[in-house]
Amino acid sequence: MAPSQPLKTAITNIHSAHHTLGTTAVVKAVELGELALSVSTMLGCDYIFVSHFGPHVLLSPQHLHRTIRELLDMLDTSPRQSLIVSADELPEGQITFTRYDYVWENRKVVRVNPNHITDQEQIDFIQMMFDCSSTC
Image 1 (cartoon, rainbow, N blue to C red):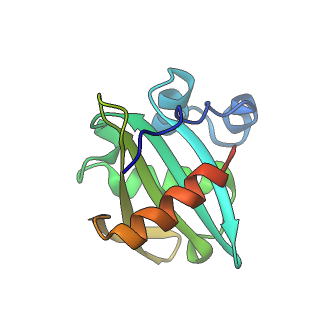
Image 2 (cartoon, one colour):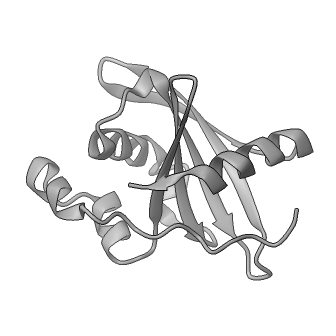
């Protein structure tokens, strides 16, 4: 994969998320610059990108259910039409992508399966979507 462009900048209207949701772990991480969010839409599907440098605790298996729920609530997007992808920037400037496949039932995330994207065609497609995404 070619060297990446800089990661997306953080949410600019974060204060509206405070009013509607209170302070959540995701909001705090965005405010601190630990995570940056961007969205790209294609054929009715919202690709939600969570950009970060190195591993982040909110994307660890024990926190993924809550993190996905907070992201969907914060961005006020449909869980059935959203795809969440982390974009982890490595020290050498490359970005690795992980897609989070989740099952949504009764307004809850009931199962999450992280899938590291390794197929070059999928990497190219996700990179294109990431490059075209807009900061939230």
